[in-house]
Image 1 (tube, helix red, strand yellow):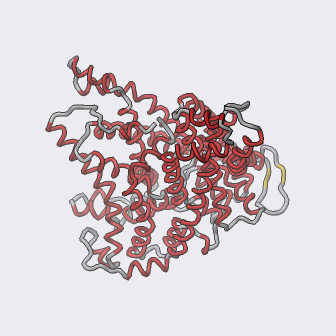
Image 2: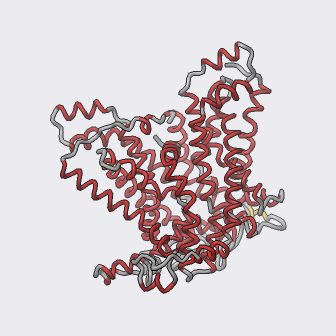
Image 3: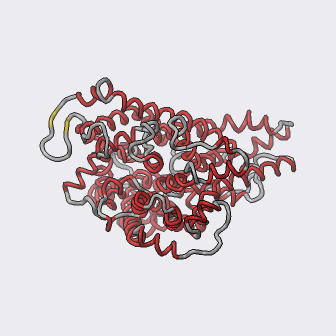
Length: 298
Length: 286
């Protein structure tokens, strides 16, 4: 259909305008700000690429890479566990077990709860003295397995990842389930008639046909892994304790740009440089993802 | 697009009776792991401190409703609820209006740069908006919209556009546009076509878009944390987080406040889990 330019603009401008102002412009402006030193008031001081130098090679290097590798570790562990476990649980649901609808709803339930509240709820459960987890271990006679789950630097980040999986797994289950259900039932019927076992069907039909979905999920997880913030904030605070063992770029960035006691340095320009680097890291993946979204017409 | 939720009469894997029982038991265990944290805060909300510490697994001996009164007022939950409701509702209304207009144009009309415009919008799906918080903060500060519900609402409308346009456009693309064509020949304006034909057509998708955006705005903590410092403007997650910091060892009150904060979404979810699941899983991936 055809439309006059005036009408066209009337329809698209509100969304175009708000989206540009609140999403596109801030990204561009972040890159610009990364070239300055600025505390938010007074004059900006142009420093060129010095912020990037500080972050990558200079005085901020240690803190930055500590957080950066935590993000990468988070992505690696979470994508392996959530996608594979999600697939297995989806297979379970796809057998049309009794109570399928109820199980499906329960599996997804944690996803509708605010991330920061999930953190606080688990903060109580994981309390070393009186939290449910350690109390339970004592009751069933495994008292020697009690740990300060959030207080031990070698355990804390894995604990946070576990809570994260509790919160998100249902999403991966249901996306994988959707992919499984989209398979032509005839394929599977035909395989059964040829005498294939369940394992054959999973291996030769279901896995190959759901791999594209798993790949898309991993792309998304990579992008999302760089916005981790709430769980660390709720369970360990902005200092990402103990001893920065749970620090991620989100909390590092928050301390740098918006303060918080004990931040190495407070500077909006330095914060913007951290964000710009995150932006550069996810850019290729984002590009691939957007092309997938456009071409597949999901 | 919603095929898998409609046609649930699928049969994928055939299991023996014994395997079925094993799978069933595993799902019961999984459900327990999901539900125990909620059960824990509900039980704590009716206990006093010493009951929580000394008998963590026992049900409450009596229903201490005074916890609810105390947590409600000390955690500033009344204000929190009101602000969350105002911010979420207005954000959703704004998103529905402007995103459906954009989606309508992108799906129904052909014009130069149409593909570029669509790519420009969906690029927002691949960049977490929170990464750009510094300029957002400065911009809102400079126009006096820091510490303001309106500032948050406008921000949420802007960041809600990519997902909503994407979902609505794809929904529209799957409905043939013949009605609109004949309406146009009869001389109907684009505005009339949009209101009378397309809006009613995409109602199911609008419901999904509304729910997904409502939940994500209601649950959001990051933006209020940075943009709101005035206690009379705080949202539910922010109110609970302030309370959590102040009353760190008052577990009966913490649990009650947490329970009060999560229960509305859980109730809505109980009634509309189908729409929740369909929107939140299909938005991102296929």
